[in-house]
Structure formats: structure tokens, C-alpha cells
Image (cartoon, rainbow, N blue to C red):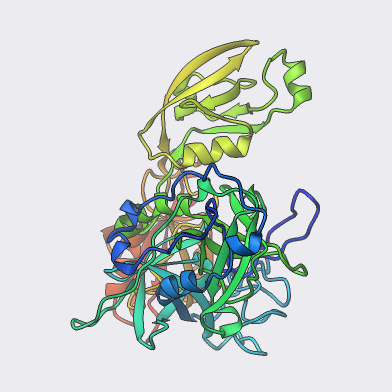
Length: 516
């Protein structure tokens, strides 16, 4: 999927590319042997975390400390796979939200028609299905593969190629566009031999300067290996609300997207995700600790449900802290509290300064956003707050974060039997009850988020912002209900939809199911 980043704090214009970044955990005096396949855990959720950084200093002879990474590469390479995707023809979207990029401006440099495209010298036309290559890695013997969301976005067919020559079909189990993570399930034959796996390590144990190894398929060149160091941690590149990327100078290129970044223990410490356009030696990876927290939900639910407070915040600066008469110089200043939210129930007020959550220091608004989002809905949260120069503790119970970015799954990309975006031309999301109340909308339904011009949805008069509450006489409470009812309809058959307009007015629409 293509994402256009804004600017780095240093003023660099970013072009995110389907690439990979890698981080490594603390390096001992001599690189320890990588774990064998038998040592890898059967479940990613219970994978061993990397040990704490070694106390001993690095020897002055760096050549002795890192004579070769060949043993490490040999132990993990078999679990790094090539992900080949066939995707629907691009819908008529704006340049800003097109998932595969436009011209040379792709936020994920391996868009099918960019200057660094791994898909060939010419990109697909509006009419032809798209094809692309990315990378991934097997984390479970049952055939679970981690990759980037933008690699498999809108995919209608996915083939995974293993280094041993096997080629297997795959389906998407779950995606999280906000962190650009996707989980695939390999379609294994009954007599399939054991799969090689790698384990998720501890990205928090990494230090700037630690060695890391990236393996992937840049430009379609399978099983390419590059070596570098961790250049920085917790980078915010304005790609999403939860940015906390690892930065590395290990060579990564279009096609590396979704591939693993290993530490010298042979553990995955990041998923290679983005590069800076026009630059070299600057790449970014999603930290493994963040990925580990998402995997159970992606496997069971297909998506990620996050905690939510319901506040708007800004960073506390030294000047603001002095003006507010606070001893703190870092934190999150509450600028607004939405009514009927967990924040309002907890008693938060504008100008409150949150400096800790459950004892964890909060040094910025983004840190608060990430901290809350990593907790499940319904979780209790203790906030340390300065109000009027005095510190106090507030208790909150988190709600469910609404789909503020409009990235809810429109249709399962691995299920072409459902009417996908290119057939109906309709983007859908579950309606959030809290937002619905403020807009005069029903408490449940399928929210129309996108309509392609010239599609059957457009011809039916559907528009973004409408909520479908009934289809063919059957109630619609979620997006999947509408997709199921449309899938059950006969091709060419008009389906009567009851929709609620913004403001609450109810109207009828007739959507004709397209022919196969």
C-alpha cells in the first residue's frame, strides 16, 4: 500500500518505499550462534525475548567481534520468503490516497511505477490487475507469515515462495494499516514438510550502533543480505499516529518491504518498511515489540482494536511548563476533552498536563497516544496529571478507539468471492457508536467511506458518509453484514438498500450486483 509521508523533523522530504529496516540487540564480544529451527517457538505470541544488553564493552578489535555473519544468515535465511501479489486494478482515487503510489512519489518506493519499482520498467494501466513483489518471514510452524500491510493491500491472489523452491498460496489473516503490519496464513498441503521459522526478539534491548542484518527480495533479487547498524530509535516519520520506527543504514530497497531485520542472535527485531526517497543509508523498520503485541489480535480477529481516551493533546515545552508554573518540562497538555468519553468520565480537563500513565513517563502527545493505543479497550489506566501546578492521580477506563483515519477493512482481500472494491466500487467501515451520536446517525450500520466514480455503487447514488442499515430487507449492523448480503445476491440483481444520510434522514438506494 502506498503512503505519502510529510517531513522529518530535520526537514527531509520522505518517500516511503516497500523496503525493510533492521535493528539488532546488544552485541556481545563475539557473535553467539543463532538459534536453530528447533529452538524457535511454536507460537509468535510466546517467542523468547532477547536478553538485556551485555555489560562488557566492545573489544577494540571490531574485526574479531564481527568476523562474519555467514553462520547467522545460514541459520535464518530459509524462513525469509518472497511475497508475490496480484492486486485489483487501481480505483479512481486521488494521488494522496492511492495505495500503490503515483509516478515517482510513492511513499513506499516499490510502487509499481516509480523510479525504484521492483515490478518492471512499466507500471500497470488503470484496466489491468497489478502485480508486485515484497518480502516476509515465517514465525510459526503452522504457516504464519509476517509482512507489511502495503505489500498485500487489495490483494486478490498471494503466492509465497520459499528459498527451498516451494511455492505456496497464502491468504490474509489480518492487517493493521496504522502500523503497516499484515499477517498471512500459508495454504499448506496435507503432506507438507516442516517449515523453517524465526523468532521475534526484543527491539527495546537495541542500542544505537548495534549491528543488524536485513534479508529480503530487493528488486526481485531473492534472499539478498545486507549488514548495517541501528542508526536511531523511536523515529517519527509522520507515516501514522503510532510511528516509533527503528532507523538503520543496512541497505534496503524496493522489494525489501515486509522482510525481517535481525540482531546478531538471529532474532527478528524489526519489519523493514520504509526508506527516504533520494537518500541512501536511511531506512526504517517497525519494532518487533510492537509487532509482537499485534500478532494475537491479527490472528484471531483480523484487525487491531485499541484503547481510547478521547482527548486532544499537544506537547509540553519548557516555555509552556514555565508559563503554567509546572516543575515538569515534558508531557502531554490536554487541549480538549470530548464529551461522553473515558477522558471525560475520568475528570480530565483542558490545560491538564499528563506526565505519566500507569507509572510510565509521558514525554509528548505522541507517547501518550501510543501508550493508550497499546492497551485493550476496557483496561484501567492511572494518569499522573498536573492541574493548577499541583500533581494528582486520575483513574480512567479505556474505551474503543474509533476508526479516525478511515482505514477499516473494506473487504477481506483474501476472499475474492466477496464483492471487492473493484467490483462494487464501495468502501465500507463499521460505524463507531460514539461518533454516530454526534452526527445524528444510527448506533449501528455499514459506513460508506469511499465510492468509485463510474462504479455500480456510484450509479446507485451512494456517497461517503451514508450509513447502510438495511439490505434486501435484512438488517445491516456491520460492514461485513452488507458484504455478506451483496455476495449472496445474484449477479445482475438489484439490491434495495436503506441508508441514513448525515443528519439522520432515511432514504432508499438500489444497487445492482455486477455480473461476474
